[in-house]
Length: 139
Image 1: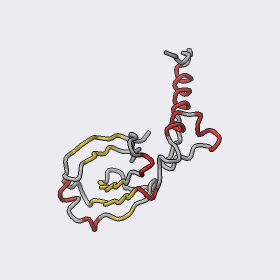
Image 2: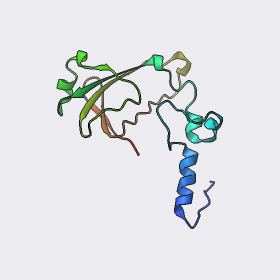
Image 3: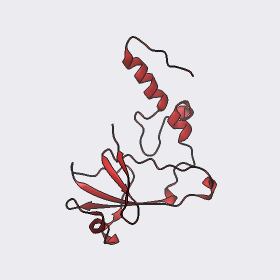
């Protein structure tokens, strides 16, 4: 097992680990500097086949207040297209998203992950309203 050299100043080690992971200043379009894409863990995972906007449908509903699942999702017409990276607000407001992904044939048999960082606390539901996973994002 390789260990990172531990420095007297712990922040040096933590900074080097963060740089290796590659998440600092990462944005949803995956724009690492072109020549450095393969030099971080993120760059090695974020390949050209990782994001294809033609396979993703993302819609959004800005709820007027906290709503239960059934009420928030009752009318599909309340959901409108939203862009990745679009800023939503104000703070402490409630937003609902519908995400539909068509997995390309090139990924058949491979493990597929969706990177979701809304910069806030989120709760993932299945289509029937069953809570599946809590999410925390942002830095």
